[in-house]
Image (cartoon, rainbow, N blue to C red; front, side):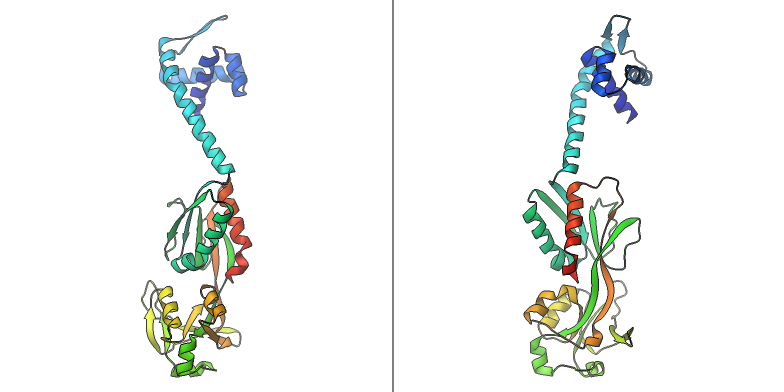
Length: 298
């Protein structure tokens, strides 16, 4: 950065053939301009200017440097101005990362709503159920379900993950609806497999306001939540699913919730982003937009 500053000062002097005028253009003192040019000459090991009390001119090397540096400095200034305009304006790209099911079912509608308001903003969306290092991948905003991220990021909670037991009307018509937790042992159920271990996860219930765990007779097991939701909708069995992912199915009657004691608030839905002094306006607006919409994620 010091070299760029010295080169900028030199170009200003060469354009004006005056340290005083260059200082006015750059908003600094003539002494600061003179010092910067001397530092550039020392660094290059070349004399760039002929100086006298009444006259200032470029040396042959100084003329060569000016002819090549001047267009480059204009390009650099234009590039920096463009970045500043992008930071301050509502255009450009926002890079996002989110879990698969959350991205498909929750985030996509939010992107559509936001782009309807700001059509000049574009999105890159990376969907992965693994924790994403947003710094190394140059992600502006990440989303995560589960525990709050703790890796040197700013984390904002958007909602709770509530587990509900539900089934399709077709299943209930054929097999009936359990009215108590023990009756689940006589029903056909679905289960979710842990992504890392492949082991079947137990269902969660509330016993005296404490979370307890039970195993149910599973007729189908999945390592993908979208597949499990589809299986429950088709009547394969009763499932314990995250409520925020099936709000439309519950509202339309495609799925019917049951057993209130199996309605368990578990973990959270989080938005996280890197700590930066200057967050681009488009990114800050999308963060605010998501926080305004967070009630819809419960």
